[in-house]
Amino acid sequence: MKKLIYAFLISFAFFVTQSWGQSNEENTEYLGKIIDSSNVKNDSIKLVDTNLVSNKNEIKKNQETLENVNNFLNEEIKTGLFRKYLKDAIYSVEVPFGLSAAFGVDEHIGDKVEYVEYWNPKTNYDDYNFKYTPLTLDMAPKVLWSGTGYINYGNYIFGIKYFSFNKTSSLGGKIITPPYMVTKDETEVYYYNWLRYWNRNMWPLWNDNEPGGASPIWYSADNQLKLWSLDIFTKQKVYANNKNSLSFSYGIKFLKPYYELNLGMVQHADVNNYYGWHFDNWVTINSSYKSKFQGLWEKLDAFIGPSLGISYTKTIGNLEITPAINQAWVFGYETEDGQFWDVDDIHFYKNGIVIPLYYDGYAFFSKKQFLTIPVTESALKLSYAVNDYFDVGTLIDYYLYWNFPLGPRWDNPWAQGPWLTKVENVGVGSAGIFLKVNF
Image (cartoon, rainbow, N blue to C red; front, side, top):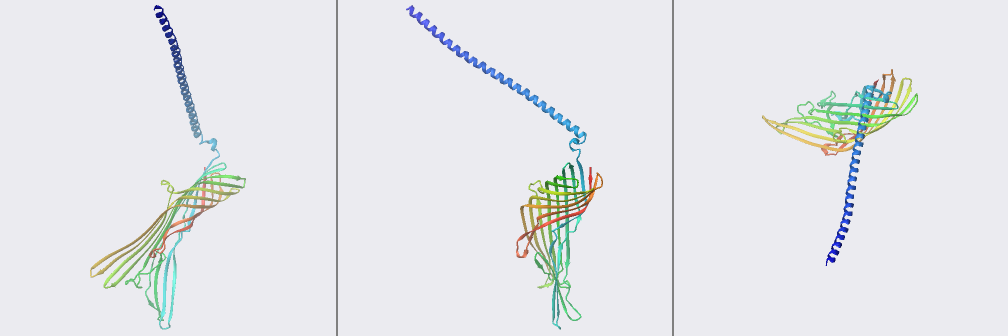
């Protein structure tokens, strides 16, 4: 029995020893893994620390570089605005003195028509005659407003040019029908005069208080063209010798135009006995046509587009002759507004009784559209260099605005005709002398 107990104890001891040894090995391996992981973490921490130090050094180097650049710029500005790179640059301002005029906006708005008829009952002489006097709005020339600034640097010229035009023309008058008369040879002469506006004959109304029995016709008209343009450009000299040079230019053009036309007519019907009443009627007819231009964006209140050009210069001593041509395409939105109204202000009078009547007929038209306006500029300049600081000369400049809208027109309102946009090639030319100052 004792032998069995000893054998069991020996076997149990051997089992425990084997199990403990195996667990020890596993624990030892697990502890090794933990130690290895700790070492990796330590290495990662050391690597992060190294990167932070490297970044700090990089930031410090960048700060030193920026400080050096700042010191360099300050030194350059103190010594003459990048004198090292722009020592050959010449700054110039050119101011012209002259006149400018618009072409293509002289509106034939209507006609003054005078009719006379002759009749002699004794000789049976009968004749008549019509006389048409055109009514045209002619825009007279105005003082030129323009100016150009240049920076000349080697084969390049950087420039900015401003041009402005704003002119109004107007006309007005009164058409009167003379009274009936008899000549010495007993020829009877009848007159009848009227106005032709809006593609319609505006016959005079009856007026008992006028010698000719017809109301005077008061008429008026005015139109306005205003625009400004701004060109920012670079001109590059591609060929040059002592007597000739050829340059190309490219840049951006801004354009802000506006056009307006207004027509008006007033007549007075005055009938002393209209079915026992005194009839009085003032008739007023007006129309207004406008073309307004806006930019592509709300904050850009002007057309904008690219421009390209070419110029050639011939040099003869101190004299330079330069023809040039430039083509631009500007884009934006154009709004056309048309208005037409007809007012009859009527009063009936009888025995202290007054009956007023008021009739107001009104029509309008509005359209907004995307529009492209090609602009061609041609110029001829003769420039004489007085010395290093002053140039004088003459300049002829012409802007041509292709397919320029001049507002909508109502073709015969009484017939309810269509609204039609009038489109013209509008030109604005200028000529004068100029003074150029070089700095």
